[in-house]
Image 1: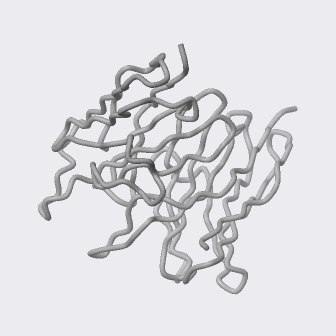
Image 2: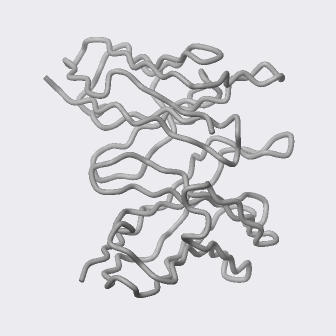
Length: 123
Length: 113
């Protein structure tokens, strides 16, 4: 059974750094990218980008380029989302997600999702 | 970037009655391979999103057959043949043509009348 388990909720102050995690199990970890999705309070879903655990290559959506950093540790089957300096506007729930299938060089239809990590940034 | 829109943004429903949500994309999602790269998700209150429909009309594993997806190009529809109380939540369409740069629609909130 494919499972994605995320780290627990965080409460931080503006300017602090943070790294949250997503650990995959039940499948070939290097074979699928893992994506990150942001959900701000009362709002919809925003796709942040992906990381390939096989080589840690990352692709960021334009809105998040330069704002966050993805990383991976294959030995731990874990990917990370990190901020160097949090802002109040980073308050959100963050989900990791894995594609349903890969074909023709691309992976599609995120089907497996973590439970979400709530990040609160407040002074 | 492909922009996704949905209508309506709010949909009160009656259990046992049908329901329909529309999704439009700013560019065609029809790939040269003949598939439409359009997915539908449902996020129930307090839960992670769950995949309902992929490639425009294929139901994901375990999804009841009262859910169906249709459409091609830039216009898509999600239909629920007979709404059940457990179907409340927010429905999102998402384009996958520009994988891995996906974009979601704004969401349609479905609740009971």
